[in-house]
Image 1 (cartoon, rainbow, N blue to C red):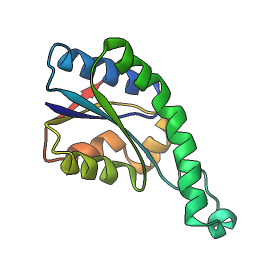
Image 2 (cartoon, rainbow, N blue to C red):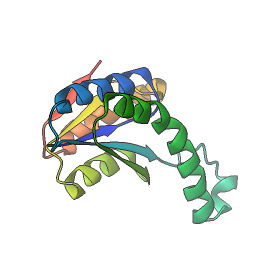
Image 3 (cartoon, helix red, strand yellow):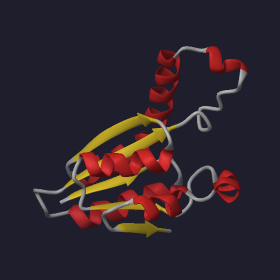
Image 4 (spheres, rainbow, N blue to C red):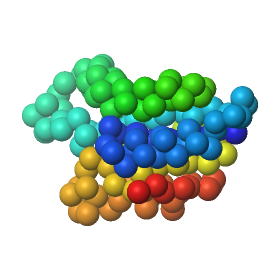
Length: 142
């Protein structure tokens, strides 16, 4: 069993990690893939800063991903379940679904609201977009 869990450091994302842990406990073949996707919006890259190199964007994304993944990693370690981390840079929902395909995930477990609740109201929910795009079951956790 392979479960992709997108995390952004928010409480709903950490609830999703806890739920995924409950699904994998006692299953030695199970692995949780913790995914954090950074985008130009999450990195708050302005038009002026757009002249910064792609390497600088990747470095900033890696730093932000490390912060966002910290609690989720701790939850997996405490539960002693197998996990991997995937810090990524790109369009959030599309990247989550791409990773699920790449790792041949059996399902995606994710929180219903992340750190960008206001942005979600304006641009559309990441969770909704993942549900639309995914080819595997998606479990939404409050």
